[in-house]
Image (cartoon, rainbow, N blue to C red; front, side, top):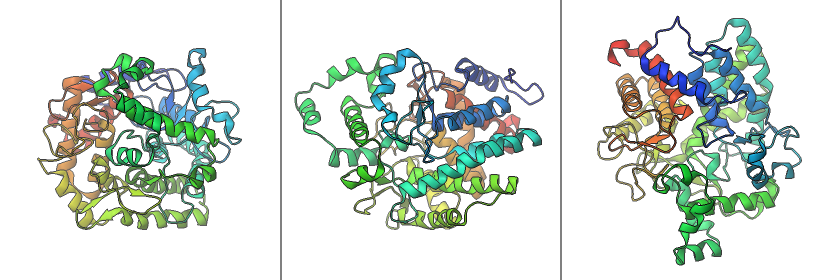
Length: 455
């Protein structure tokens, strides 16, 4: 488990460098996303393990097993497990997960979840483990995964619609993505935040933000957005993260296209794990899996030929374009005709098919800002999800092209958190773990699909 490089596998200089980044960010039980991200995040660890499996599959399995240590008694796997260091006490106190009776006694966590990409990561890591270790790993992860997916439906699909709801943009991982920001501005703008905006006092907030000490403020969420996001957390905390109390008076709740697309794919992967172990999933859960695959079609807008998130309260589609429209490709259950429509949109040089990989919002969006977090920059993880979907739908040329351009971007600029889609400049945190890990995976997959000479 100490060796990070499999010397029997074909390696490139870039892949070796990326393995070094993962080793540098290793904190023992988990891999930190970057230096100023000390905690363990759900989908960060999943993406990290997907890349780490190529050099050290046992350590990749350990990365995923660590997420189970933060699982709540009701089945939720939180989006964040806090570092236990004394210097992080204020962050743990800010969330106060212990207010909820289902929170674990042995770990401090957030009170919400994140895109459920864990089952896919478990399958992919298992593919690299020897048979006996794979079975042991699958057995260890199986029950927690079943409990997690059961929780997603029991708590987040209260009307049995097949689509799960999300109560905070953090749950989608695309924190300030335009569809959610539109909802925030419409439904969750307290008077004191409006007053700060009126007085142009946003600059004061930067003094208490840790992220803008390491990264230029122009590359992060704006201070007003950060305040609104935190206000939602504060309201949930006041209700002790009890979903019934949260939904009782909420005006801010979304059935997100990215989250639900990832859920569909991971439902399928959970069935793969069950079949490998010769275990039977509950019939009720299997029925819900099928319902979600069908319900994803409710997020399709015929006039624009795109998928959107939906307001849970009004059931109106949030017709604001973002990279989320391509996530049903990763789900893998939409029709080939709809997939082709998405690929046609993807290849539009005026919106998404730029010199560098797919931006988080289209170039012609009123929100577009090439440096502002999820409002324009290119992220390797969302491009990885799109590439995975393109390959399974048979769009080999597009998948290969996007994979090579993603690898070239990291080769040129380094493993940054995100990148300008216009000039490829690295933005956000340097030496970012999921960028390094997924670059390794793209290199390995590209070697298998298009050959080493193409890189």
